[in-house]
Length: 626
Image (cartoon, rainbow, N blue to C red; front, side, top):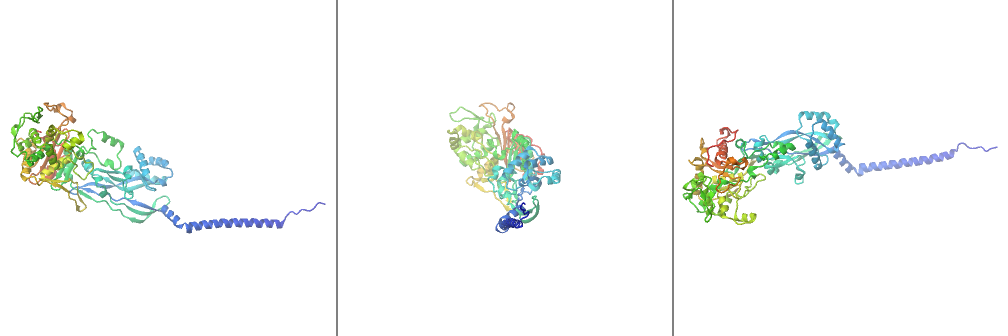
């Protein structure tokens, strides 16, 4: 009979169950221990680390851009202001896919290639979680579209900010300059903290020269945000320090008269108050609209400016180097008196040409046939006699001409508070040897005697030199800045010519008056209707050389190869308030073309801009001999 089998082994099952329970409890306890340990590490040991990371996600430090200082003219007219503008920005870290996000944004607002290209450039220079501008100056319709579709694009924001605006645009373009977006090259040079709240910096002109003063100091605020980056509340705020407001010596009314008088021509006007060294007007024509550069000029607009043959971006007032021509003659006359080479009554023969001893070459006068049998200093300045100044220059020599001309600021940069100034050229023996590697010849001295040859000057230099004559020997560094807030700034006095007697100044000034009021003055047409006495000097600078004995034929030359027209003046004669220098490229007649522009500028300053008739049209030509 078979053995009976046990179907259930209760003791064995109990043993297995106990072992399984033990293992299960052990595993649960082990896991619980790991969990408790991890919780202890997070909550106790690493508390400071994770609370900081949590705050970083919840609390952000945001820079606050300072308000850029305003710029006013001498009468309180606003020349550079800040206006509200709305900018579309992107926070890269909050946008899951940048390429897809930009595609969606392009469906909402119009984006061109320049917008995208500039965005990617700025993206490389930004800090983590810093909003990067994508498009500036949003319209109200574009702002509404973004607001409706904002939920579709995380990281997209519309920021309100103040941007620079120039109410008078072209009129002050070259003197004020402009601000623009910070470039990669500039990013490496600036203080990244102080510029963390702004995308703009002074690029050129006064805006760049006084950047540190105008910019201000950045502020900051701690803000609490949600998971989507939207600001919930401000926890702490430190306000920025605004940039300083500055007042200039410039007169907006006079500047506008000068700019309108230069309409349709190329050249420059600079007017200075000889009493203070303050620049009353500084115009380079043609100009351009500086507002185009503030938020980034388009490729098409920039190409148009670059390709313009009239070079509107070129600041002729500070960078243009021209032969001063006959405008330099009063300074050489004063040098002749100072060194005892001539007296006011000294007369030189004027057959219409001059030759050096033992030289057959004839240096012609601009007036064929000459100015009379003989001519004295007053007649020579009034009629702009070249032969007189050929003779005078030869007798003085280049060494004395150079040393005396340097006392008027010629040949060196004036030190004006602006950017990119060039210094002109007052030649000397040493300069010729160093630069040209040759000796100085008497014929080169002759050319310097009438402001030609190697000699070059900027319009600003000519205005400064004229102000030295007007002030009877005070050389001041020209200044645009008059005051910062209520703090007045004074132009530094660089030198005085106390060794030049008053009688010498009076003789030269009287001769310059004859240019305007004399019967044979080269700018006698400017005296018509004038309400004050002023002194001036005409000049005509050659652009292309003319063969010896040949006659200047304007009709045979291309417009851009014709002579430049120059004119310098100061007024009133007895108590000068303004000194002016005008250059009109290819204008040909100093008294007939450049002179009327200077007359308008002086009228505007002395009598008021409203006194200038037809200020919206270029000056018309008046009777003139040079």
